[in-house]
Image: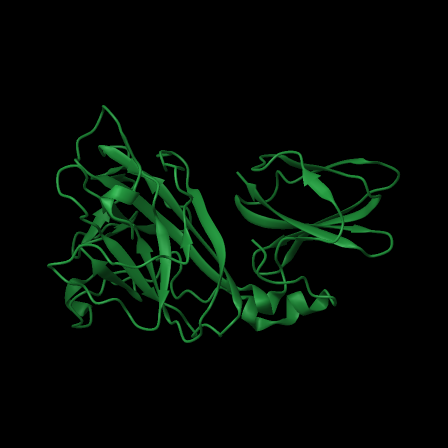
Amino acid sequence: MKGCCFAIIIIFVFTTSKGQNIVLNPSFEIATVNCQALPTMPYLMPCNYWYRSIGSPDCFSLNYSGTCIYNTAPNTPYGFQMPKTGINYTGFAPSAYPYTFDVREMITGQLSTTLISNHSYYVNFYVSAGNTCHIYVDKIGAYFSLDSLSPDSDNYLYNLIPQVENPTGNILTDSINWIAISGYFTAQGGEKWITIGNFRDDAHTQFDSIANWTDVEAYYFLDDVSVVDCTATGINEQQQISFTLLQNPVTTSVGFTSSQQIQTATVFTTVGAMVKQVHFSNTLNYSFDVADLPKGIYFLQVETKDKRKGIRKFVKQ
């Protein structure tokens, strides 16, 4: 999708403060381990700035204290998983099909600033399937709202369409790796909350049952939630010149082809920080090493001698 244009003056990418992640406590590292110390709001989770929107999503920690509703990690009741970042992560059940229809758990969190009308935002978060559970699903997404979505014990499903959602039919079966769910959307303006879960009813959710299970539900761990104003950073996929990635995702190297003579290739993070730059001469086949980059989502900008540019997103595994 095309939601924002690349800045003409590249230095703008590095100086703007709006290119930062605006999710508070995005990897759940700020936490309260003593339940008695939590504020009195009934749905506040131990991971600060995050709340139980529907049901009872969980906080997991490698430093499990036993004094709050933390669950011990990496050996959790829903399977084995190490945090993607730090020592904490969360988890929720997006479905309990086919035993209790349309039952959901959702987690909601605060943003550090309200979204700006007509700005394009890049959203990314990571999930991993619990390997002790009976089913996997495809429909996990993020919904942005002006205020928090009020829990209702009589209604386990919000009648809402998330702005960013995992593609239909792409059932999330990986219980070993952290899988990115990402996308762009244009803000209406004033949104201050993000809610993550399955917003579709069972009729519009695709399921994959597995034989070896102990829990009759789907369950996913969640970590590293980010929301970036890409109108401010100026980074998004565009193609003033034609080039094609040879492979995506990548592991050790990025390769691409182009009918143009490419002079420079630059890799940026999703918040606009340049992490790698290489120069080419007299070739139409291009490749360079990215083994030293952490796993995540990046943007590759290629540039010709006459300063024409193209940008593509890639995933480093």
